[in-house]
Image (cartoon, rainbow, N blue to C red; front, top):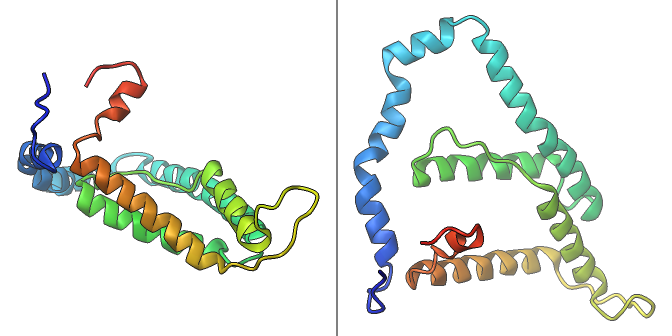
Length: 171
């Protein structure tokens, strides 16, 4: 049963306390001599690594091309790959998940295209559109800042467990 008087960030503190003993082992277990030797010398291991790499890189490049078309090449393939690499590295260290598989998705690419279109044309209706020329990257940055603030508010008030309610399980 939940306590209504839990302090701010109680859920985060609780999660860090329970997961902190496993944080180092999540990284260290993958780098034992036995694991490295099995990985490098097992039959077909290079092929498996290539398949995973290509299966993640393919959709990223496709969505990056789509993102480039939507944003008139303001965000292209190189920017998408560099941004994704930085995000994956930061997530791996802060999240304690060194084997995380991340990639650009279609809804994110479409949202960015709609945001670019909104920055360029505004929301004045389909027929009577006029250019308003808002700076796209400033809008994109503010969307990120507001998203981060809202997520921080959810974590601070211990509402991150709302996600569990979405699939019908109880928190």
